[in-house]
Image (cartoon, rainbow, N blue to C red; front, side, top):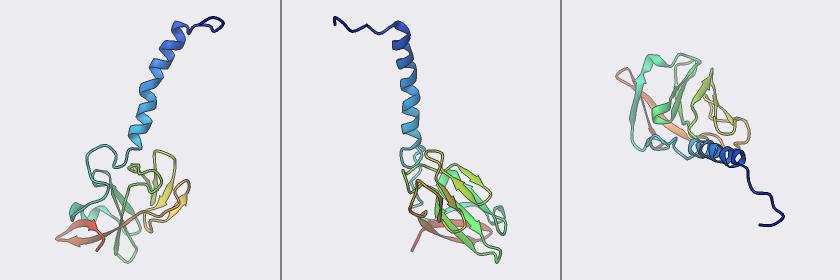
Length: 141
């Protein structure tokens, strides 16, 4: 085209090199984390040993997209660890704060409440109980 400079080889190669990287961001935010696991358990699922969750602490079960916390009185609480902002699977638990890798939303693992935007909705609650020394979570009744 007259009057328009043609793209240099460097410009074309730079564009090609960046294309796969841009796709990774989309894959990271595609719902249930891309591992084939449902966004939340659709039936009761054994997460691990009851002893894994200390009083006042929390444990993230990434493979099942569940976070479980234990109050100082010993009671258990569970939430889906799928971010309510863009559906990303949360993969980081810092103490009792869940941090979403996609846009930085933060949630309290003990209450499910949003601590930092862009998320505005709390995490979805799940039922949880200790059975035979194991933590079992499932859809809320």
